[in-house]
Length: 214
Image 1: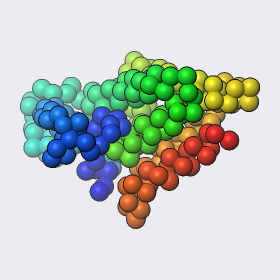
Image 2: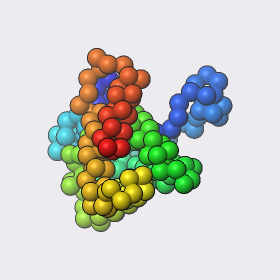
Image 3: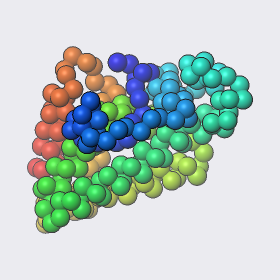
C-alpha cells in the first residue's frame, strides 16, 4: 500500500479481540466526512509533499469541490495541523497511560512504550512522514504546540530510561537514546512490503529494545 492510500488512525491500539474485527467487542465509530477528507489529504501530502498538493487536488480525490471543502477546513495549513496536533496529544496520553500501568517496573514500562510506539508507527506511516518532512510548513503557534507535546512525550521515555538504568545514564544521555529509538521506530514510511507486518513489528521492537537497554 502506498503512503497516498494510508489512513490516519488513532495511535497504537491493540487489534483483534472483538467479533467481526471489532475492537474489544465494541462497534467502531463511523468516521465523519471531515475525517475522511483529512485522511485523503494526509495521504496526498505524504506521497507528493505539502507543496505538491493543492486544495483542488484534495477536493478531487475526496469528491468534494469548492465551498463544500472549505466548510470542513480553511486550507492546507488547517488540514496539516488537524492531522498532527491530535496525534501528538494521543501519543503523549498513551505513553503516560502505559507508564502508569507498569507502576514501579521501568523495564515493563519501557517494553510497553516500545510496543505502543511501534504499533503507532506501523499503522500510521503517512502521519510519520508528515512529522518528519512537513512540520515546518505550519504557522508558528500550532508548530510550537506540537513541538511542546513532542518534548513532553520524549521526557516520558527519558524518565523511564533513567529509572531503568539508574546511575548509568544522565538525562541528556537518555534523551539521545530516546531520539535514536524514535529514528528506528519511525522508519516505517521507508519500509517496503517484502516483510510482513508481524515480522516488521518484531524486528523494530527487538532493535529498539536492544538499543535502549544497553
